[in-house]
Amino acid sequence: MGLCNKTAVKLVLKGTPKPVYRPKRPVAYSMENVVEDELLRLECNGLNAVLESNNYPLPLPEDIFAKMANCRIFSHIDLSDAYLQVPVDEASQPFLTINTHEGLFQFTRLSPGIKAAPGAFQQLMDSMLAGLKRTTGYLDDILVGGSTEEEHQHNLQMVLHRLRDYGFTVRINKCNFYMHQVKYLGQILDADGIRPDSDKIAPINIVYQSIQALPLSFKQVRDRTTSDHDLQQVMRFVNDGWPSKKASITDAQVQQFYLRRDGLSVVNGCLLHGERLVVPSCSRKRVLQQLHTGHPGVERMRSIARQYLYWPNIDEDVSKLVRSCGECASVAKTDRKTNLESWPVPEKPWQRLHLDFAGPMDGQYYLILVDSYSKWPEVVRTKDITTKTTLHILRGIFARYGQPETLVTDNGPQLTSEQFEAFCDTNGIMHLKTAPFIRNQTD
Ligand SMILES: [Zn+2]
Image 1 (cartoon, helix red, strand yellow):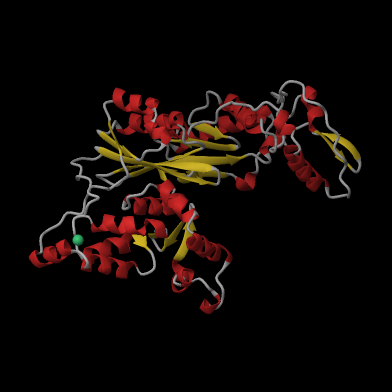
Image 2: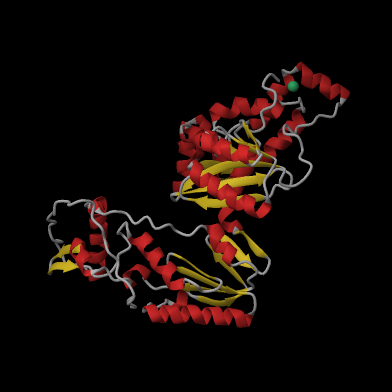
C-alpha cells in the first residue's frame, strides 16, 4: 500500500476532553475485523465527538465539470484504500489508540471513520492536483480529460507523476483509461458534453414529473405517503416481498394493490405504479379537483391520470365526480375545447422555471429545476438545501444558461427567506410562490 510522503494529517481536539479507557476486544478476530470494528467503536464511543471537524470544502460539481469542458477522452483513477495511504502526525496518533487482545495499538494512518478524514483528504488532493490541466479529484476519485489523445496522454502522465511523487498507489483494476465516455458524480461525460446519468435520476424525474401534475410539492407527497398507514404497508410488501395469497392480507385497501404488485416500486419515499405516482389517500380529493379544473370531462381526466397518477379505483372516482357535475355534462354536449394547462404556455425556452427539491436519499438531496418550455431538467445533487446552498446552485446554472423571467417554487423556508427574495429582486426574476398548478379552487 502507498504512503503519502508529503503531509501528515493533524487531528485537532475540541478543548481538553477527558481520556477514557475502553476494554479490549474479547476474542481474536482477524486484524481486518479488529480494525473495522474498532473504527466503528471509535466513532460510536465519542472520538469524533471530541474532534474538531475539518471544514475544508468539497469541490462543487459545476466547478468540476467546468474543468472538463470540451474533453473527448477520459481516464478515471481509483486510489486503493485512499485514506489509509495518508499518515496521521505523531502527536495525533495517541487519539487513535485501540485496545486489542494483543495489547494497545495506535493507528498511524488516516481512517475513513474519522470525521476530519474527508476534509483533510480533499485538501491533500487539491494541493497534489493543483495546476494540472483538465484534472479533478473528488475525494479519492480522480478524473483526467483531454480534447485529443495526445493532450490526454500528457495530462494523464502528469497526474501519474504527481501520484508517484506523493507516494500514492492506485487500484489498477478499478481504473479506466482512454475512454470516450465516463460516468462521474452522477453525470455522463463525453464528446457531446455533460448530461445527467439517466440510470441514476430517471426514477427521481418520474416522481418529479408526476408531482408537477399535482397541486402538491414533493415534500407534501412524501410526508403524506409516510403517514398513510395503508401505503406504508404496501411499501413494506414491495421491499420485503408480498404474501403468496391475496387472502392473507386483511386490509381491504392494501389488498387492492395485490394485483398490481409487479408494477409497484418505492422511489425516494414515494410509491410508484409503473411510471405513475401513487397518491396518498388524504390528497386524492384535492388531486381529483385539480384534474377536474376546466371541466375536461371523464376521458381527458382519466388519460391525464393514467399518465401520471394512480390509486385503486381512480377511474371510478373520476366518473363519479364528473357524473355529479352539471358543467361537465353541458361541456360534453357542446364539445367546447378546454385548456387544461393551468400555467400559461411559455413562448421560449428558459422563460419560466419550476424549482423543487427531492430527497433526502442516502443522505443527499436533489435540487430539480425544470424549464417549462422544453421540459429540460437540471438535477443537482446537494448535501443540504439551505438558502445559501440553493442560491449557490442557481447562480451556477444561471451563469451557464442565463436568468429566467419567472421562477416558480413552493413555500419552503429556504425559498421564502429574505435572502432568496433579495436574490430574485436583484436579478429581476419574478418569483411565484404557489403550490404548482392550482388555478381555480372553486371548480
Ligand atoms: Zn365538471
